[in-house]
Length: 92
Image (cartoon, rainbow, N blue to C red; front, side):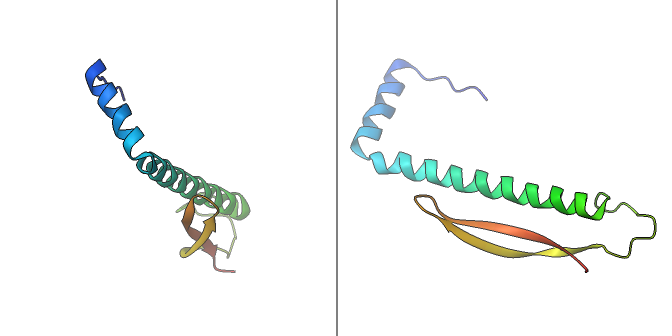
């Protein structure tokens, strides 16, 4: 993604940040929160895949344990806020 700004537009953005610096920090915290959430959700999915020994919707030889949806959890990170997760679970 490429963003092109003229010098005038760039100066306007800088002045806006100087007037209300909390806005940029709020945007950064939101981005960090979403990134952490995506990373942890993906990491837990990979961990369950390794634990079960097969990918989602893949049949295993003789295994009785299967994926069984997920449940929501959240935790609070200092300085960032509440991070939402979907914790995957298995039947056993």
